[in-house]
Length: 336
Image (cartoon, rainbow, N blue to C red; front, side, top):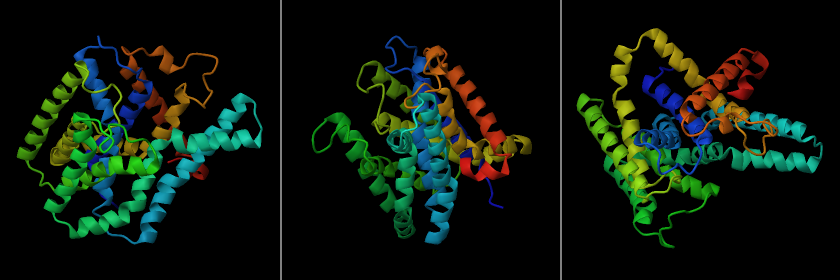
């Protein structure tokens, strides 16, 4: 049985909750929002970088055949992605009272790609993972660090200093551009796993995290960073990476402090994370899903003052639904 890492389970759970917060959060964030609220929103924005770094950390160090690797990805990600897309397509067509083949194809496509763009990103990173494994196997820490630093300055720092055609602040959301945007996080996740877990490293990560968190929100306040980033603005990169490093370096403390019951609960929730990601859309009023076409959904009830509590409600409801569905043998492997 594969050993479970508490730090990985915690990151996965918090990141999925953060994604729900981002989907419930009303943008742009009002300028009169409190500092605590802005900090909480920034933490929610780390959700996607955290998940990408987690994938890199858990995958790039492994050695397995192409068949084994892609079979796992197909059964664990592709199959649930297709299953949920079919479900949401049928759901949308039912409420729209449409049986047109053209409408079905259009709805399926709009949900499969732009709606679930994060899954598209992850699958694109999976496709280049075998090549990245070859690189990480022969590269030393210095080589990896140079690549990551070039990515950070080329895609994050320089565009925010001066937005030019050569280094644009916004480089689009095509599959290739998404992959380029996030491949740095993917490599950083693996690079952090090369750090020796020591109390000193945890303290350094904590210090960087706290300083960068407050610094980014200061720049948000004065308008140097937009309310919705493309997840690679310099401040968010540093906040996300330091937070990931903090969780990773605290693994020994987690193992000693948490009881077996707590670890088991975290593992159960973590294993349902992908399903929670998919099913939480049922509770949001987001096109093309029409569940709340004629009434307010939780996203409308929640102004920014209640966004985190309402996101927690959606998280719990989604987990309970996935937990129950996992008990049904015929559909267990289709949903998560």
